[in-house]
Length: 370
Image 1 (cartoon, rainbow, N blue to C red):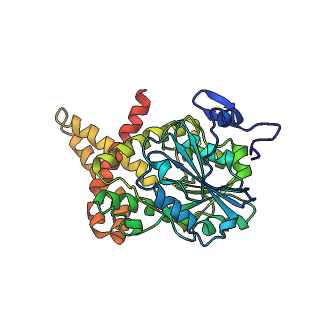
Image 2 (image 1 turned 135 degrees about the vertical axis):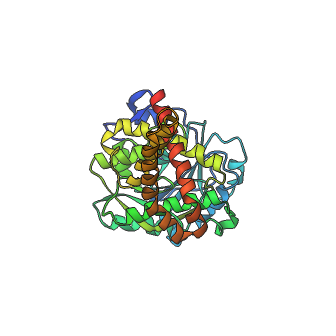
Image 3 (image 1 turned 60 degrees about the vertical axis):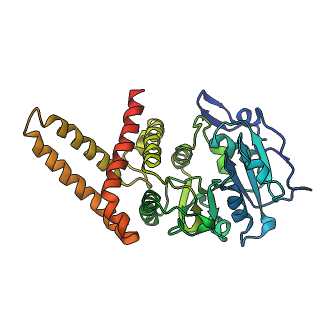
């Protein structure tokens, strides 16, 4: 199969060791595919790429969802890159009409780059191994490319999907709150003619653009903000990205416990600061992050700071009261929105928002402490 990186000037990728040619990163240590799909590969329009690591509980549902599209089956291929799984992920895929590649564990950024190298399509679609897509997912993901100015497309986690999709039973309050968080951001994106963030659970990008930008930065060794880094590079390079709320995948793995949610937000805060350090112009405003979230973090930490000082200096209690009132005002918009989606979550959301602000803020502080 022809390599996608056969031009005279190789694209470059920013890795943990500085700038290195993407060609070298992707070729090194590659393995031949397991030939689950036999015969000659015809030219396809779309390549769906799924990185998988210890995904035995979800990978079959994920792949079956991609294979069950209303989109012409001859016009797309499905590529799964196993990232050194130690469970039965590979065995469960045996017999399915996909192309499976294996590599040592290097993280999802590396696995996606590996899949892109092997892809035949002109459009690359990315989703995660714990997602199940709607039947019209591919059709909706590529629809915006009818406009030749569009370089990339972002879809959504489906609303109301937590309790119904493929036997999934994410009934926990924390999972439901996480879904409402996403839906708040989708409402922001609906108002934007173009965006600067495509999340890899539901993303499409022209292959030529992906190669020119250098692919994913493999210095992001875990599934955290590698898509933000890629998106900001696309935005700064002048590529237009758009949001399509009709391109839907259903997530099977929202954090179900408070501890897991807090841990996830902690690392979100840390890795987002890594990205902001590279692209400081995005720190004040991007199309995806609500401004109220940043102010909530600052307000909560200011409140905690002055509460700690109040015993030593009583007038600080007035500052604390002011900050508490400011926090309530900053959360009212989200609380109203959450209540319209899920009344119980709306009632509990002020507490979850405090947890979110503290968790992300601690991740930011950890970044500055390193």
